[in-house]
Image (cartoon, rainbow, N blue to C red; front, side, top):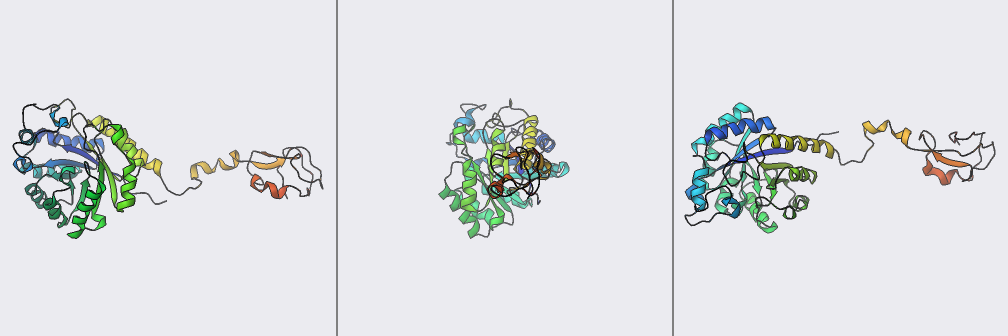
Length: 337
């Protein structure tokens, strides 16, 4: 049986390093040890992301200063652009794929110059036409998160990608809800199947719920990419820490996702090798309910259905009734014709 392609698991480090390069490097090592395929950061020139008047979202106010603006918060949490080349080298050392999400054109151009092969566009940039156009023209694969968007907006973004050269094989779409944490009633994992049916593209899931049950369920619904926020310590300051997984939790999630992959298996309903040996033991055959003499007519009073299943199948019951016994049968003996 052909084995399905492995689910891509992304450890979303994001800004959980809180502007510390040392902590970001440690996160790379821990993400690799936890079983992640990719560690993803967020790259931004703060002044190009938010105005001085931009307010923080409610979830961003958690574990940050109440009075600071969104721009002030971003400045504290982001690393300088030059740091991402260093992180890329450390990713190579630890043999984990480096990825980052650009939040502005300067950051996007910087990442492209780093010769990356894949880029993640965050949910908030799904209507950022200049950014979509720029990345669509580059020789990279694109992963697009779709939090806060509807199907029409997703299709418009995909249209931009295709207009400027992207093929279907180069585009992946992540179902996502940008509420931290996302309440269960708003997760809507059924959207994964709906997006796959509608878009005919590679579909994944970016999770912002508490814990790791939801990503595992998403795999069962057909997600081919799983992204989950990752942190060294959920008690650190920062807006994304509470909905993140620490290394121990992330490792458990990875294990359960890999188990889920095995559990999903094939779409063909077959008798598997492991159960085949039980087939004749558990199924039943047509047997003599009592002693039957040669020439007797088979009927429902002298036939029964019992284990083992090595004789005539009960599915031909109607064909057996009314036929003559060609030999003597003792009770419980398998009937033959």
